[in-house]
Length: 298
Image (cartoon, rainbow, N blue to C red):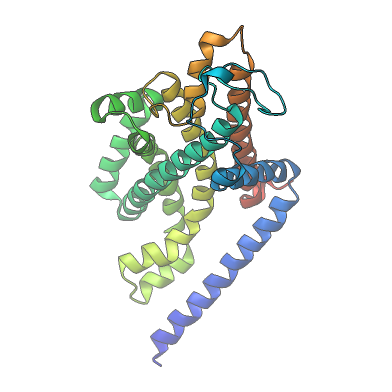
């Protein structure tokens, strides 16, 4: 083995050990963050209920039973029924699956585009970085929900289009976040050493710099999942989101407006579910931020 190869191998071993140690230390600090643990528990329940919806839901969430319309909560229907006689509990459970899909795939779309733009712009610099950042600055001046409404008006409604709309307009957030991390990391000694031994730009960027950006990206992803679920619910509430009869919390809130006095549980239950899930992801994100940033250690 040549001397250069030995140096490269030694550098990779030295870099991987601190990275493993960082994530182990992060997990220990996260488990000591009581608020984050509470958020993590509720997020786990949300994900488990979403994945096991066909098993845990007591009724078909779409099948109507007009004879059982607007029933109050009871043993037969713990959360009551809606104006079509559909079981609200079953629709809440399947609505959780819809919200999870929208949140996760929106984040994947945003993270893929934003991380790539942030890595390339921050590392290459020059006119390419200026071009990317000016586009990011312009897109961040508009409210995300308004841009999502505009895109959905162009491409049409549906779950896939909501994922695309919410994900595309979250790309600038990732791009700016990752670029700021890259600007710091590319000046570190281990990156300069990797460049000195002849590492290609692609190898340095994705093997040495990219792992250092994962912490902020993970934290941002937890917040963005909550934001995506909230934005998707808002679009459905306005009637341009997930089309009926697909169970979705925003659609359930919109349908409940006409029955607020007669059946207030139709408004309260999906509203509480939406609030609880968004709050849980935010609590988890706060805990991850504190655990990953030594300056915020309590």
